[in-house]
Image (cartoon, rainbow, N blue to C red):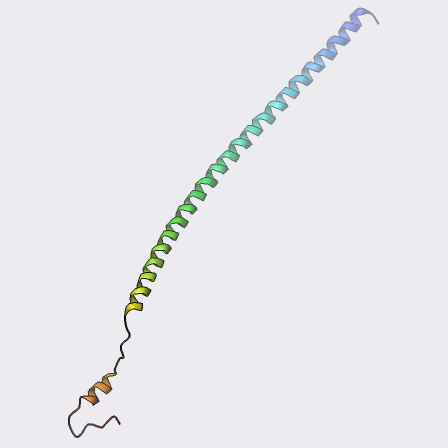
Length: 109
């Protein structure tokens, strides 16, 4: 094998290596681009999740505030009713019969 054949063989291998290097470079670029796109999508999902969580938290806080207000009102009513003394309630019939002054009214005894 003479020097020209060796040089041609080396140049051919160098060209093959250059072609492979270009191919690998394109593949690596596509992988990097895909990774960046996935990263951006993940960030978008995170932001949407945080937003939804914030909305749910705000609704829960509003509900808890209403519940606290309701509990306070209920507690106040219980204390107010506890201070009232129960009075006996007479039926209309007994009031009418007790106040009846005529001999025709039946007695309650």
